[in-house]
Image 1: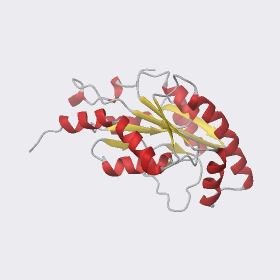
Image 2: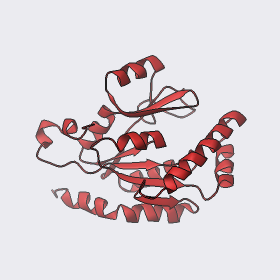
Image 3: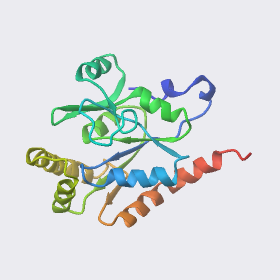
Image 4: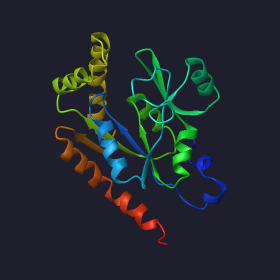
Length: 213
């Protein structure tokens, strides 16, 4: 699937867009916290692609910021119309990344972050986006379970589903060649340092490209 060409506006067609960043990891691995730190420290270099989902918003979630909350019918139609790069379903809800969401970030000149699931990663690998792939791994399943329980948003059924899914996700994340970097998020400060160091070249490249006034 060709993606990049259609994302460049007329004024940017002579420029190569920065490579997107795909970040994946089980729910509770801490990837959202790491990305929040990255976006806070380097908001001029990175921006999140806002995913679509058919699930209901959780307390504090804002439509258009955390997710685009849509109906199943609307999302299925958009997928059928070819508007999505990747999509998957988990626990009865659909999740996906639209072309427009990625295009909006790429046209801003920033690195587009795709926070997606394993199936989404596999779909992206069939496109021409050519992103950098990072997998965030919890130190253990017990730690992962504790984090999920502490959220207070999971039922026993949904918790068991997430833990079962985590086993599959970790197995894929650890498989050689699937990701460019694997971070074990045991200590947040150290995990973030590893992520920031890995992305240092891209950060400095974008910062250096910005004109001074």
